[in-house]
Amino acid sequence: MHRLVLYVVCLFVLVVSPAMRALALDALAEADGIRLFEKGKVLGGRAKDLLEIGKQQKEPINPSEISDLDAFRQAYADLHERTIAMTLAGEAAANADHLLSVGTLLRFYGRMSCDLDKEPLRLLLRAQMLSYAESMGDAVDLANRGLAQTRQPGVATAAARIRNDLLESKSLLESIVLR
Image (cartoon, helix red, strand yellow):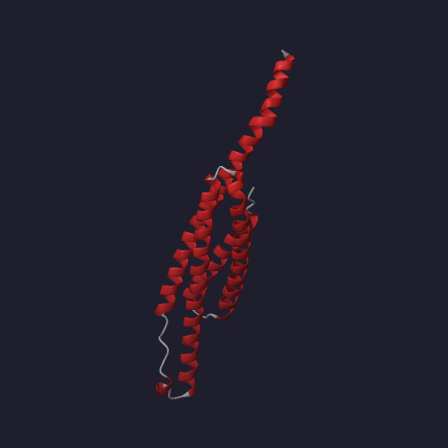
């Protein structure tokens, strides 16, 4: 009787447990993919919001219409605020697209059953995730510079939200481990 119990336990540990662990890891990859996909949609929405704020900033004045130094200073400030908003919105939209694409690939990866097919995709995904995390770090630096320079509350609020989303997404990309 004891031998039978021992045999069943050994069978479970050697056969069933690795299979269950593989299923759990695949489910984890798919869950990470869903989280990245959702974060990408949120970041894309924030990019659209900042783009709208940027479009609401004053249009640049024709240089021939500038009559004095104060008007020149104001025209430059308006152009600078618009540039900050539009540049950061573009960066956020590009990083949102990166999150959506990696999220989709992770969901696909989690549903793959053949380890031989998974290996090339795992290597590609890991390289892409590290590259996108680095890109998000650069976008965070851009957002920080924009926050330091902007004087418009709407631009500052939207830029801070985008910066925080980028930091969370960067951490998530760096924490995902594929098996």
